[in-house]
Length: 151
Image (cartoon, rainbow, N blue to C red; front, side):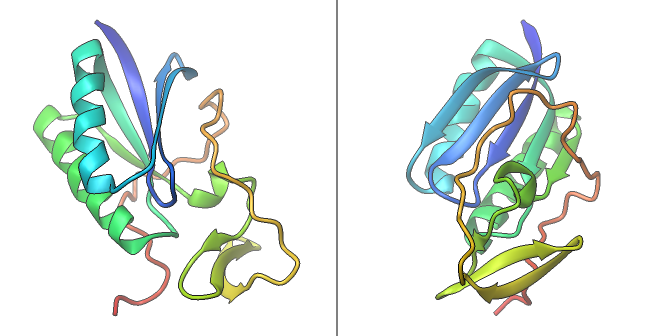
């Protein structure tokens, strides 16, 4: 069985999952719907085809519920299978464009700080799985990054 890394982007629709071998994207999954419904099905399919050696996920900012569900699901897989869970900042995968927050507000990254702002003239870009992982900034601090205090 091939050893792979799996990247999960669940903070926006569609949910994206990429399978990487030797840091190169070899398979992509894209699915609209609830993270809680989609992730278990995708991971069942992936685990039948591949041996997962690490998990990477976007830990924020973005949809609180998707971040929570993804974190709990992936952390469980990480613990049960003794594989690392690594965090990625959402801005790494959308060319640093604004990320939907609440109402008409958007998260924006300025000088490595995340702020909440109106959209103004900023262009929103879709999330994309990178073709290669080697330049992706990773963090072992894999706790969710909600940015705003929980309500």
